[in-house]
Every structure is written in C-alpha cells, then in structure tokens.
Length: 112
Image (tube, rainbow, N blue to C red):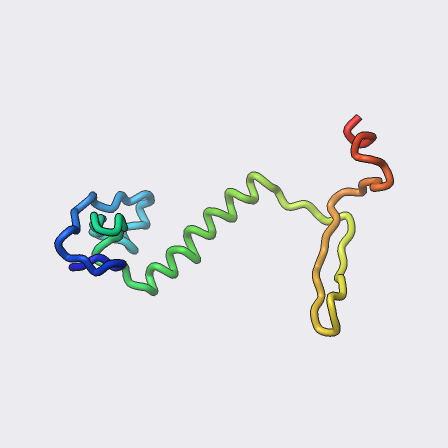
C-alpha cells in the first residue's frame, strides 16, 4: 500500500479504524482502516470504498440528512412575489420575494 498523494510506502502509519456513525454505514464502509502519511500529512482509508456505493451514500443519505436539517432550520414559505428576470436572449434568472418590505424607508427607519 502507498500514499494516494505522494506515493510514499515507508512512512504510512495505521491511525484508527473507521468509526461507523450510522448502522447503515456498515453496508457502505465495512472494515475500513484509516492511515496517515507522515511525508505529506495526508490521511486516507483503505480499502477504498466502491465508487458506486460511495456515490449512493452521499447522494441518498448525506444530502437527505442535510435537507432535513435545513428544512428544520429554515422552513419553506411561499413567496410573496416571484418571476423571471431576462439576462440575455437565452438565459433567465428565477427570483423570489418573501416579504412585502417598503424599500422606500431608510435602514435606520426600518430598524426603529
């Protein structure tokens, strides 16, 4: 085995076993070992997980958990107003306005 960055073989140290965070992790990351290269200070796992399992894990598990957390922190609300802004002959930008603010007031007046 060699470092994935500098390809050093002699200065690799076993660091730890991969700690499974969720029971489902075992299906994707069974028996991973974490190594550190003292030459370039790069840490990596071995054996490297199958790319298809890794992609599935990040797309379907990690992103799902992030979406749940974000919806909890920032619940979805219906826009007050929305539309498309022409950028050029081909491109448009979708925009939303979520509050009816009176922008004619100064910042100081709004904060009072």
